[in-house]
Image (cartoon, rainbow, N blue to C red):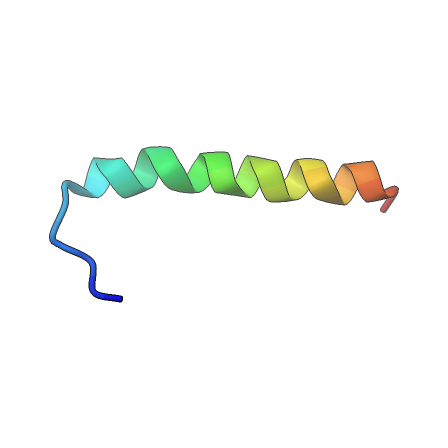
Length: 31
């Protein structure tokens, strides 16, 4: 899948959310 060039701050706002979601799942698992 090819990604069209987008403003870098779009990724910067999306990535922390993804990271937070992963961290949240990790904590929910009881790690």
